[in-house]
Length: 113
Length: 117
Image (cartoon, rainbow over all chains, first blue to last red; front, side, top):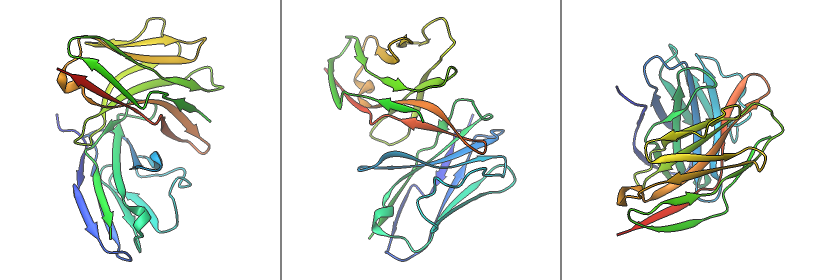
């Protein structure tokens, strides 16, 4: 079956612009996760959704980051007023339920110039 | 909080030989789960194998097996009969729970495996 998909696969933007990253989880998966992978920081957890609800948003690096999930399916991670330090690979994962194995998408490579 | 340590930044192995990638962890939980993921140069994180803390047997999945030593808090990945396609970054990870009902994976820094022909 189809895995987790993410779009765009690559995004180049100018400092100060807003970007939206999209994640389509595996069909039927109720849990969805966002992570960020950068050279200096390794893999960082950003946010977790159970259904449409995110119980804790403290993993988001700053108030320029926000995320939502609608219909228990697609999720969007929005970064406002991008900064060069936001350059990273943003990975989305989904699992059938919480405490289940997480399956990752191919990631979105974001470059902020 | 959970912590994962991978002490081998890079490993080399000859094709068809076995290789062990090290992972140690730190947790105060009695029940926990350990994962290994593979990340080829394409960037996608591929799930390989899972070990639960109460599983009596070491996990195996094809050429992958997990050498789980609970008392030593180690969960080493063993890849048998290495193939050129096994060249990738390998991450050990552990599930962590956050107050309020969130959960996440905590990852080690990874080991870059190179399989030589």
